[in-house]
Length: 325
Image 1 (cartoon, rainbow, N blue to C red):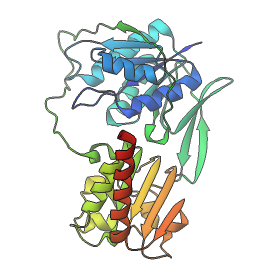
Image 2 (cartoon, rainbow, N blue to C red):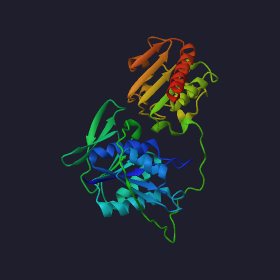
Image 3 (cartoon, one colour):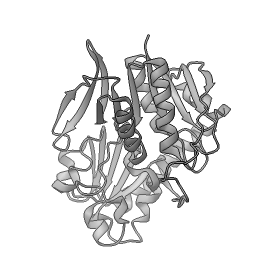
Image 4 (spheres, one colour):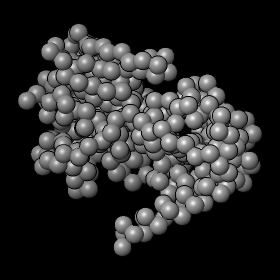
């Protein structure tokens, strides 16, 4: 079985493996034998996390410069491993860093690059990427026809599925040149709470004008925290100052593809639906039974969210407590 290289993402705060890596490994198993590339040392927790989702090999970059030169180290390791292993594909999460790594890698390898895939499958002539067109109105497929296919994947659209394996761990020694790359990370501004990874979250809770006030918008944050997801808001909620503009969900703000999208007091304008309509499951709570969001929802609750949401939170906490007991 041919190798599929996966560039694993790590949390900047604690160095743990991100959910995006789980999703990439899930997709990689459809194409071949997954091998994860880890920027940083292969600690026991990271090895266990990658092995749980099917990594058969882990190539760690133990260089202390990894944190400052993430893009450079990732590109150099992938170039070296691509020449050594001749993988059937290289998969990278479609974040800002991932897109830069993929672009540089494609130039270095002189190969084709496909970005923002929402799914991948193995065709008779190699990996086939699936994309959303016109805000998810329909799907299209594409394929790289030159060199090793490099794909960036919208991992929030992938349902990660475990497939335990015992990976073989190796180190890839990357040394900075005498004149290191000009761009490096000089500081990281910590962003606490679930909102830090809105576009890549598997669970998104959004609030709209129906929330009523900025104080009431705390309900959105509480539900997101209880579900282990991220909080966002509609254009109106952002314009009213209830929600930071960086968390605005619509066609000009954040476009999300979660497994669960919970809309609270969101009417569901065309611009808002363009930012979330590809969610796998949509749940809506609104007092207006004719709100457009109900036309998109899999489950809907018509009622006062200030009565519904506290009961929802109580039930979430009850189930959590009973499962931990």
